Length: 249
Image 1 (tube, one colour):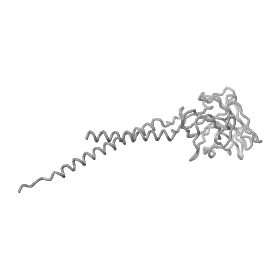
Image 2: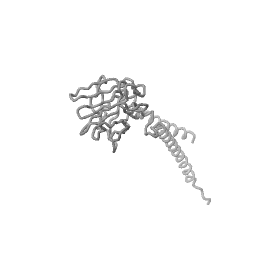
Image 3: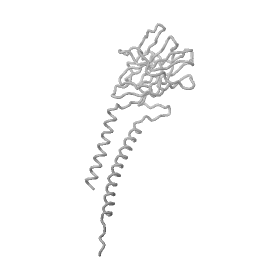
Image 4: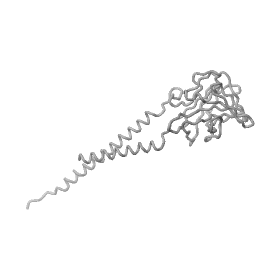
């Protein structure tokens, strides 16, 4: 009797291989898409320069191009504040740093730097945003970088905020650039400076008249809907690629 070959095992590897190729193709598509997204994020992520800042991160700057011509003193009862305005775009902003140029009369060793939101008309600080910023280990004459701690709230777009400096056990001297001080970018031309007296009242004036020397950097954070649309597009592309491979197989 002639033996009859069983062809099932030969068909099984063929189907298994085809399914394997389809799955591998889908995985490859997903991997390529993920790499593209990561590459895009890396390409748009802020790149540090020698000074630690990039122009695209700077949303307020009255230090670059200026030299100290005077100073204002911030004590426990007399607070000093400099306004900045976040870009008018459909994103929130994550604060990176606040750089203060400090003088030496007095320099100050115990003081607080914080971000405040603004009154409805933007003319003066209202409430503190998050916790006070973290100070560098050593305070020096010149530029000092203060950073937000973990879970610092994001800033809204197109809004006025204030950098507020107040002394604690000692006063601190914040450098000013004089009446010809440069403010950048141009969107900050309407910014203000303010002083809070011991009676709690704020007095404000145009920052161009006597700008306090400060640089604020922040990074735009896409809205959740933007991320959702991107992920939905990625999923649609992966499914379409899988269907095409099945039709071709």
